[in-house]
Length: 64
Image (tube, rainbow, N blue to C red):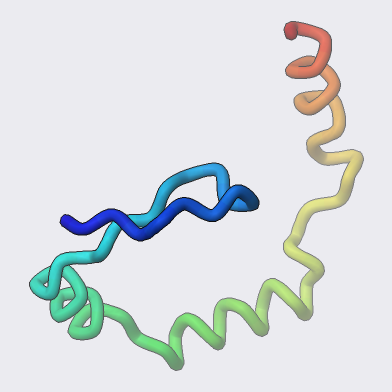
C-alpha cells in the first residue's frame, strides 16, 4: 500500500485502499439504506440525550 503524505490535522495516517476492497465495498454498500438511517438519526436526534451517557463520560475523565 502506498502511504499518502501525512496531514498534521489528521490523527491517523491514510493509506491507499486496495482496488479489491473498493470493489467489494461498492458491491455491499447500499446508499439508499445508508441515507435512510442518516435521516432517521437526524429526525430522532440520535436517540440519546446527554443524561443517558454523561455518567460514563465523567467516569472516564476521573479515571485518567
